Length: 260
Image (cartoon, rainbow, N blue to C red; front, side, top):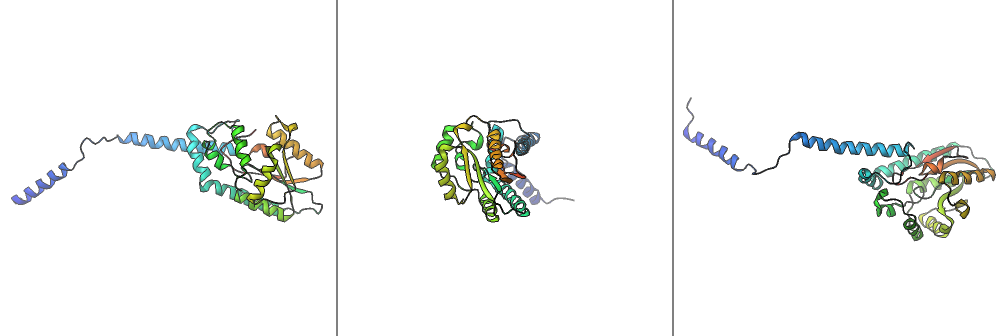
């Protein structure tokens, strides 16, 4: 079978045209190298997720900063929907538990709340300091606290209002020092919190105590005063563990810092 001459010419012309449009000097990486980078990114992401999970489960040894390779993931978590959803489910479960209890009529059924990263968010401060990538600076943080502009964590505000309306005595137990009392009160009120029964801050007598010891001591004093600590909400395990613990505790997420 003979191919007409004009068809051969057309075929050759198209072939030549396709060759003329091939990119020149194009650097093409071998496929295995691309896969290797993809697997590396995935591995780092999985390891950082595991690190966050270990922190929330209290399986990590004391740490001072977020691992450098996890800084971006922590930022994405804290500024994304995941953090909000985790706060919401913790607050929802706490509210369900609070509703399930039959309170006594003597006014001594108490719910304890931490403040920082529990009721108030210091995310604006940590956004300027690497979301936990920097070593904690007490002076800089104290300066931030004195501004009194920390916003409420909305799911925690809802829980706070719920337990207050159920008849619990709300006791705020914070690691902030007594010198920050006035600005802390103003900040809480401006953020929507009201009618707490007690606000306990670190006095000079508490200076140097580990948080878990300080908060255990204060809860022990509450019990000696006759309070039954039915619930406790905090973002650090040191808010919740130790002695004189609540009937049930609720850990809020915080991968940015650790307090012993």
